[in-house]
Length: 445
Image: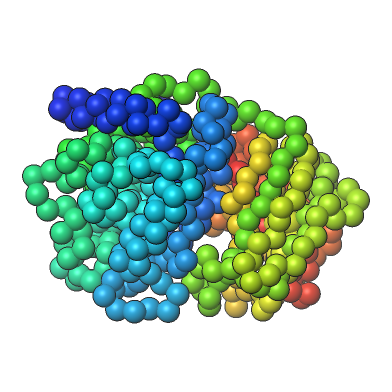
């Protein structure tokens, strides 16, 4: 049962209603919505959220998602770190992105939906540009830090550091005149925990609780036992975000399929061990339809393209009922076979990030199959998680703390490997590690 606790001030409700009426009067078109991803993520994380908006007749051309160039935070916000970004880097990129959205749409205001670290740049943008924002929804943003200690004061994730101390100063922690919504978990968010075991320091008190994402002056809602990413990407979060932005409940949560879909996006890379959203030139992408029972290819490639300087691998027209295998061969990266469920709808931000090289301890494997959940984490016993018919041993129990599981095979014989998460089932095929191949079963939900 959904647990909900609201802290809704009457004045905030009046402001919200006034702004909503003003936005509708100013522009009869739907307000543009800008989705802002978190640390190490990319625009593709918003796939199902965008599909749910579209399934409620929200115009596709009013839905936008930013790809931060270097999405991972610096260890110290003030010290340059290769392929990492500062809070100011993120704010500059988000400002430029929203300026472009306003230029493309002719709108003077946008709504912003953010996950985790994306809430930091969102709060900074709203503070600097309140007249440009109708409302802002933050899912799982560690607004009071992932930890609040006297060490590591340069980290943007330290609630006692300069960045968050300044951001949270004042009686209200939100910008006056702009309605804010925060969505949080009831103890299942690994970045809002009182002890540091998820940070690699099990004996450390973080001085942060499950209430860390809540903000004084915002509408604060508890979604229940959702994980960190589900605070923005899950169906419960969607229902609250939709209601907050539009002032009414969505007509449907289920995604409406299209008969034919168009897929597009970029190939992005990994610098060492740091994920980036920089485009990869010279990568070849092939797409195959595969059997839902065996994972075997059903004919030749239905799409093949080599990326240019922009990293774009599409567009590709596909039916909406066939499971797919994406083969990404990027320079200096393993050849990555990504198996996906059928795509119910078109999506233009399907960025493909090849697998990093296998860890040294996996070098003796004949094949490796990864089961990845980009829009959430695995929680045991909350979820049903099966990889090759067994519960993965590398998924912790209790608070969902892992979004990937690994199957290490001693035999690279081609056979079906089934990845199951609750009601989603993907059948992949192992590919030999000795030939520089990696296999990923990537979940949609």
